[in-house]
Length: 399
Image (tube, rainbow, N blue to C red; front, side):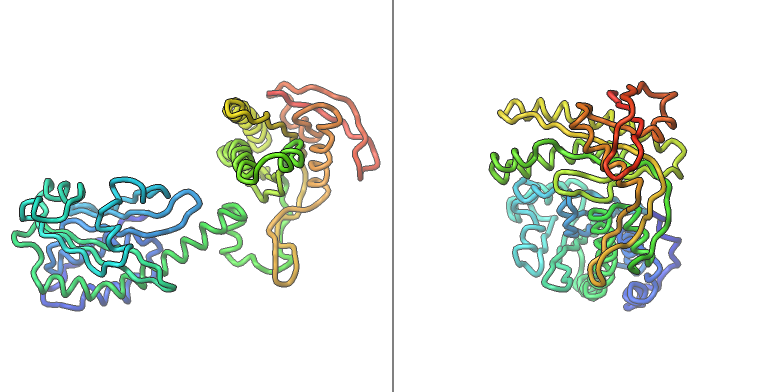
């Protein structure tokens, strides 16, 4: 993220200068943390003695409940800390000003110059006193649909903020709420697309690739993975246990794929479809490295599951390489951004053959020729593949 630009001095008697800047001059800044850092510096130039400030945003990311943006005097860039979903059970949250605001308080103000036994009791206030801060104020930022976020300001000025300082800070709240909501909506759209269709497809959709039938031909290595005997598992295990098993399996498979440059396009029940575009020079080798790491992750998962009495999970992987159509397919009102084509069908057929041939990972000859100089492959002969007129030469990978 770019650091805020240099700030021209703002006359102290220019009451609305910061509000004007926040309203009219931040439209080209994409990131709220950069806006917040520059806001705090502009407040200082306007004569408001802000020493520390924080912005707490509930983002509802799949992994994190929120983010905390922290700025302190002398910083040109704010720090961003992720907040876990279990934070509300921890001491850092219980009894904190954030908990008071989210429980309905419209302001939390604390005089940090008085003895701590006379004020609110929370470790945060003791930390601020230890840093020489004298006054602290927190307010809710109201977004649409009843969403509440939090902004806080602190000072080390003797006597704390005066009434004029508080009044000027209050003027900022409605505009800061609007500016932060716009950035959050943009980030939320990106996060949702990354979560549900993948980062590359998400970027294409955000760039305008939303028309049905639009797409491009991509040469890629294709990987299709499927869990074995899932019907039996789902019929015999409680629902929550089945979901937990699936999530563990998908974590074991997905994290290596993403780490090695692949893109997961969809989860299909207990299966997944991923591609490694050949625009990456080592795409095919990276795919097999991801398979190797996923195998190790599945071994660890099965060991952990075994300790709780769960049966081991088995899977099959089919791998092929070829041209695929990558784009929007579906009805007029419901689209799927995916890949289709004979190469995808081949990978699917090879995955199905893993059961028949007793191999975990099967590769087509076309794929094997691209990696066999670097990986130890087992030649398993020619086999008929449903939907293809000629037998296909196959290889197994045990790495």
